[in-house]
Image (cartoon, rainbow, N blue to C red):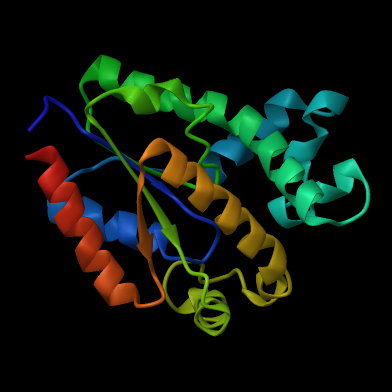
Length: 204
């Protein structure tokens, strides 16, 4: 096992990132778990109202509006625009963990391996969770208050499944390009166990 391990979990909202990150932390005895959502909330008041950061102040499913009419191309442009800024913070978090020799689990919507150089480190285990089964995914969205986001209803997110699906499809292509392991969470418990087995194997 390396001196320290960083586990980077990607995926759109409600595919199981947060709960699986917590499960992994318990199973692997890793005390530091960070969320990309909280990193974005930290960044927002710092960058303020500068026009070049405006895309950070909308939900990812609405980020396409910065580029004109809603289209598959603009959905991905919006996602990439947000990811461009967020990837810098994610890169710094991973580098900090490695500099200090700390174990870290980081889960994030923003999963663009082409923009995060720190993912090249051998001690970084990368994986992506997805659910392209529309019925199963909608169910996971609407049930999220039962597990992680107890005060945040999934109704608003369920209305934007199309945008999330397009982001998943785009990111899955990136994962294929960069050789990153992906896990289908339409069977959540199986995905959770498969991810744990995979991570254990990678850090042996």
